[in-house]
Image (cartoon, rainbow, N blue to C red):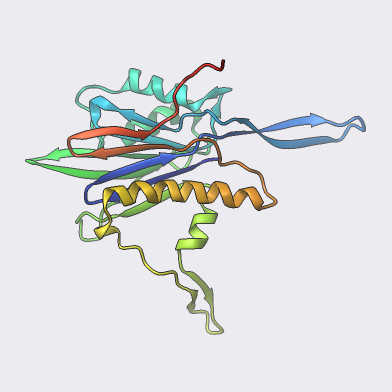
Length: 246
């Protein structure tokens, strides 16, 4: 599992992800009974990618090993094999899902895809949520009337952040929804880009730190990679670097 988030505010889009890869190992005990153990395989997995030529970012969540190969290598192959100079943030999400469905149609893998597309003289933000097995490509940053909206989309191990930020409702005796806890709102439209960066790190760090004390698999962890996308620029705020150990 993973935790990835896209925060989209007027100044730009932030994409962030954790670095943990969890695997489930199956074995057989001396008495012949089989067992499964979920364990951490790596804290150095890349889940957010910058497509510099297309001013677009991709983050992946869900299952990481496809055919025994980390999904990061398959995303890099997708970029090399499928994309052309004419592609943009609007065409890439559908191409990405079709590419993975050709070989792994039923896999539990999803993506955030975000960036900017020139429409006339204006750079318009696009934020998509996609899923392979559900064959879904959904634009997240549009209001019902078609105008641009601002907010955040998070995927993967979402329960901790959702429990903090989303109102809790129950059914009353008549079957109607009743709000029993309503957190104070976040004013996304007024959020500065630095605050969006801070929020993305907060969201992942809070998930990691809360899991630490819960009796559950620790399947979000490692370093936090943060990418910022703006109309005329895309750059890393922080990202893992390869290094040696002395």
